[in-house]
Length: 240
Image 1: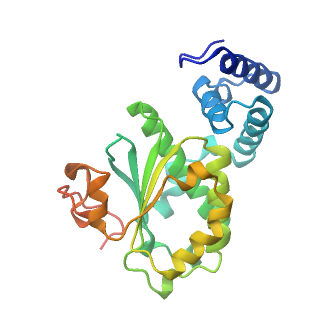
Image 2 (image 1 turned 90 degrees about the horizontal axis):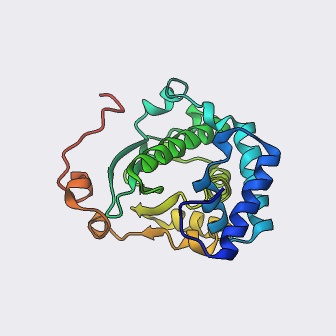
Image 3 (image 1 turned 180 degrees about the vertical axis):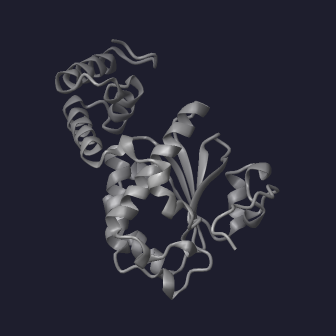
């Protein structure tokens, strides 16, 4: 089978070989998506062996974590906290996930359950991005209003797992991360996680001095007022 994306002869051969190998492992069409093969190949510079190893790891992870089976009702306790939601798009048309870390309560959920919620968020964003035809998501990571109640001793493990998950299992899905309200602790965390990120991923992270910096990446009507835009939307959670 041939992808619709224009490839060189060498790239096309790699694509067909990866597709053939994958079909030897599974016949389930949800694991044999053409666009996903292209993302995996792109992430590994069309090296067939590296791409196949990445695909196998992705496939085994999706089966083990039941990534296709996570439901909104299952994640409702997390959703009601209001710590993360999708709203608007950046200038590249990528759906934007807004993460408000001040609503994260470490004692409320085990680390693995939080990871499952993160998978749910990324899966939801992937579907949105595919519907919009852009294939990637963007993230506004808002660290405003953090207190000692938000301090999570397992945060380093969470960052490591999240970094690995995005690189290994969501190849080319992350378009950009815009980080607001950075302090020295975040810089420390970022330095710990940085070696785990490849050069391409590091280039997608934008640490901004203030919220006004977001206007470089978002149109005003796609940006909430609290971030310097004209959108008056107010997220309903948390209630009260």
